[in-house]
Amino acid sequence: MEMVTGWLEALVPLNEFWRQVIVAAVIFLFFLALRGFFTRVILRVVLSLTRRTKTDIDDHIVLALEHPLKTLIMVIGIYLALTCLPLYPAADLVINRIYRSLILILVAWALYNISGRKPFQDLTDKFKMDPVLVDFLAKVFRFVIVALALLMVADVWGYPITGLLTGLGLGGLAIALAAQDAVSNIFGGIVIILDKPFSVGDWIYTPSVEGTVEEVSFRSTKIRTFAQALITMPNSKIANEPITNWTRMGKRRIKFNLRVAYSTPRDKLRRCVERIREMLHTHPEIHKETIFVTFDEFGDSSLDIFLYFFTKTTVWAEYLKVKEDVNFKIMEILEQEGVSVALPGRSIYIENGEKD
Image 1: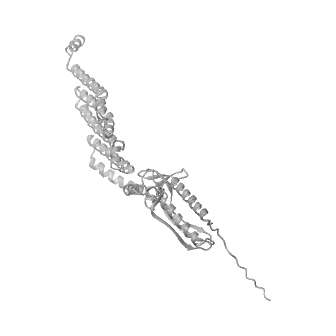
Image 2 (image 1 turned 60 degrees about the horizontal axis):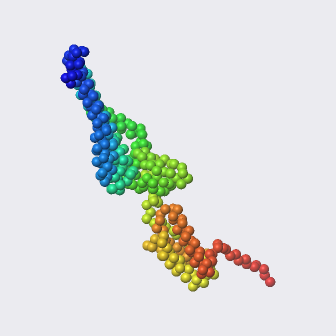
Image 3 (image 1 turned 135 degrees about the vertical axis):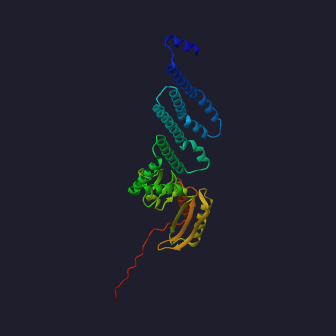
């Protein structure tokens, strides 16, 4: 510094103004170098330490704070450099307000990044939280962060927050009255998220739509039908409808009547019932808790065997394969016992009205 000062004195006579300019430049260059050191050294060291832990949440938090911290270093450097310059009091006041506003914005930026779902993915998996609920809470938290940051920045610049909040309250009431459908959809979304009748990826059925849930937002729920059409349902409507969640079935029912011919002997009918019941009890894909196979009734044109049981799988494609396999095994039993399936029939008797 003495060499630099002596060189400057030889070229330009130093006065108070130039000394302040040099100090400001040195401070700015120091923080610029500090920013580079933070990016290349400190950040890498911290990431290498967090990657050794069992959870990824600390990695996500460090990455979320990277850009706000790098910007913060430059903001502090620029502010300290400007405070060393001989500026007017009015300029100092504006610079101070800008500095405080930028600090608030950077803090809000850091919290906004941290409040995303990604940094808390480990906690979501650990506590088995609904992804829809996590996304909803993240959006609410981010909205609150932005709103508070704007209010605090307005306070820094001297705007009356009380009057602003009152105006926002009256404006919000007017907007709510003018957009009742939108508000009802938002509350419907809250009911869906808190009640959790379904999650993203579930197969659901309502009187209005059937398909797989792809997204749940504040206003609507997007459902992909089996015809691959994407339907957007207002949350207020879907929240007020009965919802059948097929994905959450623990097992899937098969129920039908097996109709055999009236000419079937009693012993063969009994053996068929017993063999079908035994086949279902030993089938690896049939749930053993509830199996009914009984000779139920004398039908109009058949002897009816009632079958009622459940498959272990709830996946539709696998369910159909199990059902097909059971049907083939029943056909095999009927063929081995020599029992035929009854066909619908009707007997017509014609009365001869001729007289001798």
